[in-house]
Structures are given as structure tokens and as C-alpha cells.
Image (cartoon, rainbow, N blue to C red; front, top):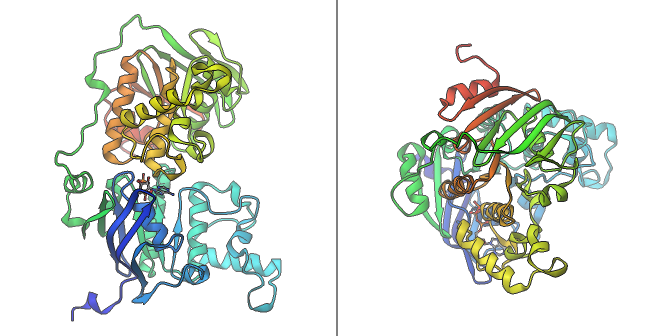
Length: 505
Ligand SMILES: Nc1ncnc2c1ncn2[C@@H]1O[C@H](COP(=O)(O)OP(=O)(O)OP(=O)(O)O)[C@@H](O)[C@H]1O
């Protein structure tokens, strides 16, 4: 027998099937993850990745098939502590109690184990020892809600390890991290891998799969289509496996478009804006122009965009649409003045999860569609159906609650909603977050169309592919605009400005 067969897989799922009503989320899916590897799980939005993870982590039951850990059958779903000893998933969204300290989050509900209570001093010491032992440098007294996304993820990983799990699922862990934080995460993953931790890594950024994983599994339309060492699968073969088509990807570059009309009038004016995390930022966006904002997460780019669409009030400066000043910090007024937005956090600012696609897609335009803010269901249904086809949303129909959509499909609903009101200014914050490579193309084509219609677009993104659409990109660092690049910029120049390093440093 060869060596790999001797060691039982960390996890083995065989013949997994799962339905949600009429939707087949998984059909006869199998997955084997070997100890010590970082195993990528990729697929288009709605392919079944999150559903598989919920089964592998004991959150939902399978309809068919089995799961085993280290060759032993998985515990019954009622024994959640036993699952925790095998596996944990770190999600994009925090699974910590924000008001409680890091130490409390780490040892919550475990203080009285074994019949004796642990004192606070001991709890803090244990927390510190745990974090130290995995090289996580976070103050244990910090309220968890104040942690950066990066630190919160490390704390959640450490918590999982403290339960004895050596198999960690990372569900789109890089989605909210800037490039430096991503490098730190990957460094930490490699280090933990050397210490016997196995990862299942979900990402829509395929280059990350090549950077940090050794094996990749592809799901497509609820089915397993491929498992192979990453060095045996080219990027285009991976995209083909995900889409079931041949032909790779194409993203348009703003540099290839006709130049803006010289007399295109200014639609969005932000004048000498200052606020929490930024100062003296001015923006002038004309009809049919896409202006990109780039920078690290601490650069202030999100805060500037959120001030433009009224989520934050500036401490100084003004925002105007077609010369009319907007009242500060008033989202509703910005919306009425013609500002549509894709917010940073779709769960808290973007969607009403328990409502249907058609309700969410028409949310911001209700007052224009019918008396008293209630659109007739027929109109909502038609518009919902239009959103499904126009944005390639995978769903049972316009009446499906948004909560039952995959993450990427939820993001498409947010974009549909932002544009439904036919705004003059569109503020997009990470519009392709969580969106699969192929859908990304379609969404970026929407941005191109919006520009052609003469809207002014402010596009905040961490992704160079997204920023390629911009006629010019402003780079923020330390809350101020430090550089401006016209379309056609070389990647290296933009990245150097974002990171604040000279190209030849
Ligand atoms: N709670 C639910 N109710 C109804 N349908 C659901 C539910 N959860 C998932 N689905 C459906 O199951 C299918 C698989 O979804 P899943 O979330 O596993 O996809 P995914 O691969 O994780 O996608 P993404 O990359 O967009 O996160 C989708 O068609 C989705 O709409």
C-alpha cells in the first residue's frame, strides 16, 4: 500500500445529496481532504460550496451520503461539541460576540466545564497562551467587535484549534482583506500547515488557489467535476471546469474605450471632504465617467465613498449632485437626489434577507412605483424577473427569499437594486465581492453599460480587474489622495502607489 493510503483522510464526504425544496444544492458529491494539505474548493455562485461546508461542519444534515473524520463516522448533529473537536469554519461574517472581549469569546461557555468555574484571571491567561502558541498577536481584553477582520479571523481560527480541531474551513477569507493582510493570512496558513493544520479554502480569486493550495476540487451545478493537484490544472482549465464551457475570460479595459466627451458635464462633486479616516478629499466625476478609488483598507477609500452616498456625515466639505448640495449624512436624501449605491456590507446595509428577490431589487424605488410606497406585486414580479435575467441571478424565481441565495447571487441582487432607480450617480463599493469569475465579467459589463448611459460612477475596489473599468483611478493613502492614474496604468505602478513603496525600493 502506498503511503497516502495508510493515513486516513482528515475528512471524507461520500455521495452527499442535499435539496432545498425544489433546488438541488448537492448531488452525489464526494470530497476527500488529506492531512496537512490546503485544499481549495471552487465553483461558480450557487454551485454548492457553502452547502457542502454546512454539511462538513455539522450545521445541516445530508439527505444522502456520509461524512467521516479520520476514518471514523461523523458525530450525530446533536453532538455539536464533538463536531467542534474535528472541524470549524471561519466565515466572512464574524462568529464572535462583539461586546465581549477576545478572551471571553475564546473561552465562552467553557468556563464551568468539569464542574469548576475558571476565574477571570485564569481565563485571560489561557486566552493569551492560546493566541501566543499559534503566533496570534491580539490583545485579549479588546472587545471582539473592535477587531480588524484579519485579527478576528485569527481569533476564530485559534478558537477552533483550542477545541482540538485540526481541520479548518476558510470561507472566502480574503474577501475583505487588503493585499498586505492577505499575504499575512497566507503566511500564517503555511505556518499552521507545517504544524499539522489542514485547510479547506474557498475563494473566487483563482490566483490565490495557486498561491496557497496544493489540491483543488471544483463543483459545478451541485456536482463534483474535478479534484486534482493544482500544478496539474491550468487557470483556464480551472475556469472551464467551473463553467462547463471553453473560452476563458475577458475583462474590458477603460483604455480601449472612446475618450469622454470634452464637454461632458460634472455630475458628482465632492469638495474638500474630511471625516473619520480621511481629510481634504475632492472628487469630480463627469457624465459617463468611471472614477476608481484604490487604497488599503486603512486608506479611507471606503469612508469617502460612504460619505458620498450619505452613510457618514463629513466633518468638513460638501457633496453635490448636478450642482445641488446634498444634506450631510442622509442616505434617503442622497437616493432622492439620484445616488444609487452598492454598500460595503451587503448583509447589514444591502439586503433584507427574509424578503424576496423582487422586493429587494425594487426596495429603493418603491415610492416611485406606486401609491404610499407599495408597488403592485405584478410590477415587482416583472422587475424581479428582469433582475434575474439581467444580472444572471441563479434562483428558483423572483419570489425566492434572498436568504436562500448563494453569496454571489445576493451581491447581484444588491447591484440590481442600486441601478433599479435609474440613478445619475452610482457608488459601488467592492461590487464584485464574492462573485464568481464568470459572473464578474457580466457585472463589469453592467458597469460599462451604465457608463455608456451617461451615469457618473464612483468605483471603490481592491481588485485590479474592477479598477480596469475606471477612466482614472485615485489612490488614497492615510486618508488623502496621493496619486491619480489614467486608464491603461501598469499594475505595478498602481500597486506601488497603493502600498506606498517606490517601484525600485
Ligand atoms: N437555505 C436555503 N434555502 C433555499 N435554497 C438554498 C438555501 N441555501 C442554499 N440554497 C441554494 O442551494 C444552491 C447552492 O448554494 P450555495 O450557497 O451552496 O452555493 P455556493 O457555491 O456557496 O455559492 P457562492 O459562491 O455564491 O457563495 C443555490 O442554488 C442556493 O440558492
